[in-house]
Length: 113
Length: 117
Image 1 (cartoon, one colour):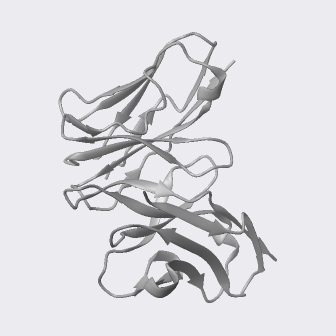
Image 2 (cartoon, each protein chain N blue to C red; image 1 turned 90 degrees about the vertical axis):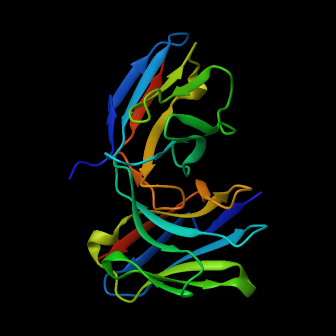
């Protein structure tokens, strides 16, 4: 069966540009998570959706980061006015419901020049 | 607040030897604990999870972990290392919200496991 799909796999942008990262969760999974993984570090929680509701966005580092999941399926993480410190791998994960194991995509590697 | 500490950013063992990766956690409520493995340029794959049932948890690929509340530890072991075990390993604790659900994960910094032939 299909796993969590993220696109693009690699994204290079110039500082100041806006970027959008897409996540297709496993079909039927209610919960969706975004994480940021800096080089050589563990993933850090950004935000969490239950269906279309964003229940926790405490990990978003600034107001330049915005995530949405309008129909409770596909999610987009948008970063405005990118900065070099935004360079990282952005991981998306989904789970069948709250408290169930999270299944991760392969991530989007974002490089800001 | 919850946190995870993984002792040793790199661990090297010989093929066939015991693998021991250490993880200590802090949590103000009973935790959900997880071990994930990450291969280069890939996402994370769940090895095993502890959710307050048995304290000894068996996972995939021959790995297991033991929850020790008195030591606040959840160390990962495998009796005999294989070359294919070389990867990055992450311990994680759930970000339990006030409603009791297990939501976002808090990860340790990871341990890079090296297998010597």
